[in-house]
Image (cartoon, rainbow over all chains, first blue to last red; front, side, top):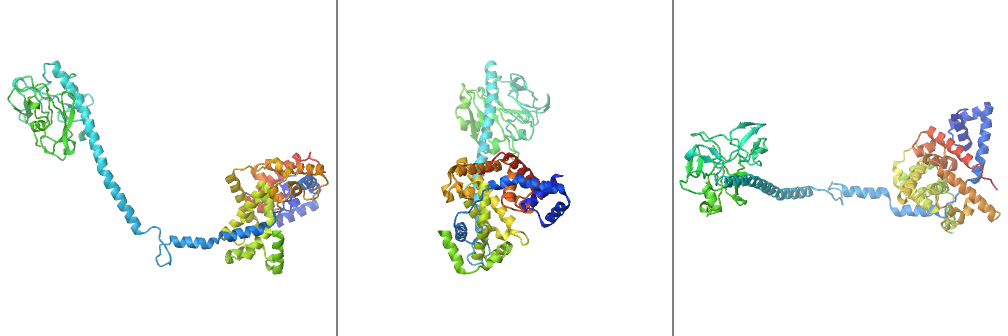
Length: 326
Length: 214
């Protein structure tokens, strides 16, 4: 006998069958002796269970208490209707209160705009300060390298180009692609510069290791560094292929301009850091940010504004290096 | 006392025409008209049956009463979801089962109550546990204890069944629901109900075959 028949017989015994199933089992019992025997067996098996089955009576008054509890709860449709009315935006519905109106949206939008307006300058300022600080670190690194070099070489600086009185000193950087020099030293940029950010590979080598140098071509305006030389009587600036010096014996003044040129500011002396100023490195390791907004401002002006006594201070050599624009 | 007064009030009203209404008619009428008397008739009709089921399920009279009231509160709130053409009984059992499950989850209580509870008697039941379990007058303390032990043995065995088997036994065997109604309550196929019940009763009868009756 299959389990299915056992289950149907059990259902028949417990009154759990549908009418069709009940009729089927009745027919089966009439003609099948084994089914009748199985039914008797199940009846015997279940009789102890029947005797053990407890019968629980509800506590008195349970139905009354339940009805009173439900009545006190309030009608659900009325509560739902009140909730719907409160949520309805239709002003013609009496007592309707809109949860979100246009004025709420406008107020929220104004709040968001205010927050953005307050935050953006702060974000911009933090970015600016971070770039300046990074540039100063870089500047300090190769400024110290230059200082060390000059002390080991009788206050002379690395020779950049030229001979004799036209010897120029300074540092330059090559644009490297892999191991080869890719371009002229016109991208003497602080690695934080915008060109570096645009993917230009820019490396500044220590003068002790040798640098990639492209000698300036007289008569052309070649971007390079301002420099001062102590190897001869001249100290001045290389600009547009000519020497523009003071013509006096002045000690080398070390100052490094970490230039972060902005593309929008043409000119020979590009003011770095979004046109706000430039960093100056001093031999004693100080790096200061000097605000200056005029891109034609000369280095001397800058120096004098920062350290009025610097050009005559023989004890504090400063190299200033700047970039010439076209 | 309150129950007696309630019955007197009911009798004073005269014969109740709602008695002849089917469960479905009662519920659909309450859904549309929200007549409190219709709701009272429905609650009264299922009072013993549903309380007994919940008492079996939860093992505690207090919890059973609480869940009973929650069940009918849900009936009151959700009667709009009852579809015409369906049967009220399995729907009601389904609501009650879900409420019992939620109640257990909330209270994190096991289905098994204290083994001592039925023996010592629960004051909240309004009567001693022994008398309630026996249903008949006991001859003496020894016989009472033996019957109580048998009831407790049955309870233990039923509670030891796997979840679905236990629910099927409670619904079909203890409460007398049909296979199809139990399948609707538990949202399982009818064949599953049949097979689970067959397996569970076979196991129960084998486990309890050693228990002797007075």
